[in-house]
Amino acid sequence: MTLSYTRTTNPSPVSPAEREQILANPGFGTHMTDHMVTATWRVDEGWTGAELAPYGDITISPAASVLHYAQEIFEGLKAYRHEDGSVWTFRPEKNGERLIASARRMALPELPVDDFVESLKVLVEADEAWVPAFGDGEKSLYLRPFMYGSAAFLGLRPSSEVKYSVIASPAASIFTGGPKPVTLWVAENFARAGAGGTGAAKCGGNYASALAGQIEGAQNGCDQAVFLDSATHTYVDELGGMNVFFVMKDGTLVTPELTGTILPGITRMSVLELAHEFDLTPVERKVEIAEWKDGVASGEILEVFACGTAAIITPIGELRWAGGGSAPSTAGESGGEVTRGLRERLLSMQQGRSEDTYGWMTRLV
Ligand code: PLP
Ligand code: COI
Picture 1 (tube, rainbow, N blue to C red):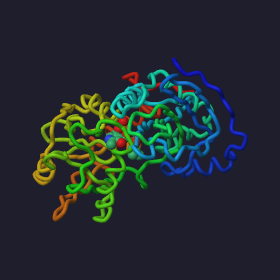
Picture 2 (spheres, helix red, strand yellow; picture 1 turned 180 degrees about the horizontal axis):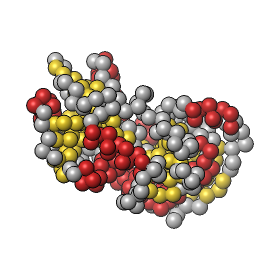
Picture 3 (tube, protein in one colour; picture 1 turned 45 degrees about the vertical axis):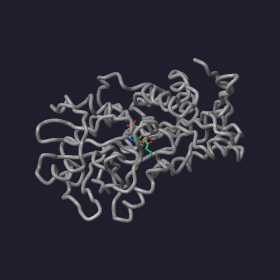
């Protein structure tokens, strides 16, 4: 472990009454907890100055490299309250490993995985009261670690100073109204990532580049956009913040293979590992957008769903594109049988309602 912490308690935290009001209806990503973690890396010192401090605005030089060259990466995971009051998170070492992979791609320093996991513990210990109660629907405390170049220098080179922080925000489902099928727009005009680019890194720029497709989708009455490969506009990559799966009539559970343009989701990885519990064969391969359109129409594709930390598992309903649209590919109001089953299996393990047979949960508090 590299980091040791100084701790400053927030002298004016949100009052318990106000916190309870927020936890009753947290939305997603709107309310922040009372504390944050920060550490600094300098090229000649490595990681130093880890602290737990009151949540608050940060001061940054207008010349900081993140503001000009977007040298920034982040992670997303959730803390869940179990029935005995303990607080757990899901496969955090995988997020730590992904943060390292993202850092390598974006020329940022590596934070060791055990320091990453410890930073989550430090924050959640301080803000434990913000973790929603066991049995309170799908609520959790969303944890957002992030890292950015903070050195004031306008030349183009890796930042000589970098900040790492973790903030937390109580969360209900990212989609209002629970797991209703979402309508997707095929973003044919906008690619999210290209070959050799940063698609497999969790860097802020990927999300900025997805917004135009998202807006076009919203203008066409869709909840989310799905992005295709940038070279041929033929193959399905992923959504702006979720991976995609297809339940096929032939008993396979198919997801687009990782080509370097897709974020390797921890939920995606877990769903592939859970497939056998549903008598499905997991398959990672290229999926043509034409196969999606035709497969739904022909009945070869039984269910389609999106998955990710924020989204959990969300059924995908109608697919729309310029000049066309498919019939809903997911039966019923809350998705098909496999979609619902996988969602409940994952969620019940995360919430401590079913046995953690894979050793995926890590205790935070
Ligand atoms: N794809 C993108 C672009 C994402 O932002 C996310 C969310 O983190 C995912 C996929 C799903 O990843 P995970 O399951 O690790 O949350
Ligand atoms: C997550 O699921 O953790 C994400 O990062 C998605 C985000 C864009 C809300």
